[in-house]
Length: 293
Image 1 (cartoon, rainbow, N blue to C red):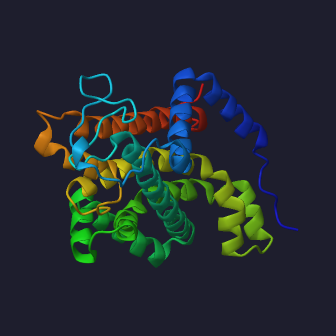
Image 2: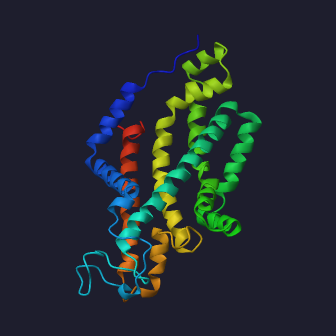
Image 3: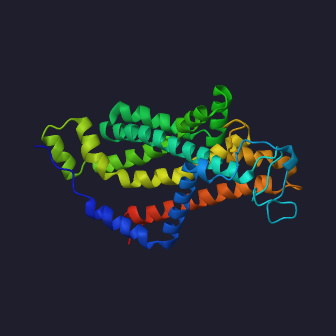
């Protein structure tokens, strides 16, 4: 009979309780949840069709400014499209891309990090050198180059961002695996004849997931900023699909006369990224033993 993985339920509950006591982190998590719900329920909560144009409403100001209309509370863009509705639908793009990139990159990073940290030898050398090479390129420039080769589009931007993002969880998992592979329960499983695959996936992985989850949550905010940057440069999601980055870009030419076109999408990016970062900080304090009380 193989060695059982240590029971971590009590530790998990304690960490969650620590996170719940952090009011700022909990409030930020609620803000993130509201953004996610807004994205999911976009067809029902958006007040207007985000793609309907009306040149008679071109650059219409927000409702509280003279000339505004409460049917279009945040005003309209250069094509007369409702900014609030486009922001709500734009949340879908940012959150979907962020979550997809993190899911793909974390899965690849976990598998590569486990292999490098446990198997060692030439496997570790190859994976570590590949990680070093990818880390040598500035992330945004690397993504711009990939997008220039693949062309703009939703799935291409996910691939371009995930292509390098996996190195972050890979390094975390490798380090945790190196520290865990010599512990008693891993040695016991090895002595009982467990395969390397069983030890990596059943014995080591469940006990190193906490730092991986924390790092992946932090990185999601970075991915959202990168997606907005690529869309701002015209290399991300293409019009007429609503994207916060492209909305900010659309308002550049009217920033003095119609500040609302760029400002509100920019504020949405700021709020979501800030909320994710603060919530991630709370997760780190709760789940990382080096920062817990």
